[in-house]
Length: 294
Image 1: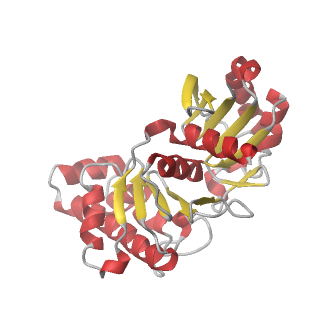
Image 2: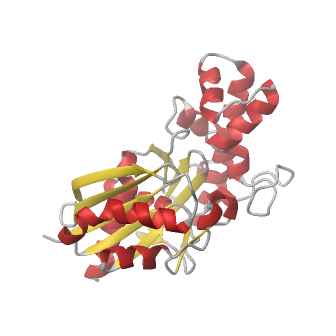
């Protein structure tokens, strides 16, 4: 049995699991909170503590991480998201800890691949996660797109409002700054003159607050516009919606509502994500196991 040590590194938690590469099932799993300190030495120590119990049972390591993985180095279009971890040598650090062949990819790309292999096969699929930020992954002609610099699928930094707020990436009106959970919270806080999280604004919308509901509709309309643009560009068959906002009550219905107003060629099949919290772990394990077998 070929066993992979899969690692999923996010802003709030780091998960590790032994994955049976033949069945793509998790054998054993553990997770810790992501260290609040963004000093590389603190993250390295946390990773070492988490991964060491699994090392002797694995053949290789597959990482799904937030940010851009460029030749094994963790970077971001918006460096503020990573703080002191920008340009962190992720693959080298984990390879040093485990002494195992180590590979890394973006977590949304990993989740996209797992959603794709879990679906009835189709050629072209986009995965969108609408959560604290907005991320994505693309499968075109049955191949996951990672890009030469790890950037492929970073749809959160696609401009949907040229007059919108300035994004940390350096452009105005990125969809992440307009439609993400963070954006929903920021817009709600300005409107209600009180500090609100995106989750709290969404709860107000569910309770019938018309101003909060307008904020959620505006977010869903922006995502629908992005989907339409990418569909006509990439000839998408399906779009899978995930993330805490994407999977919230009614949100996907609102996206569909706005897409239905567009001509048929702009309307791919919209599907709710099914893979849950372990999509990054399982997607990275599956993708890199497949690359090794070729």
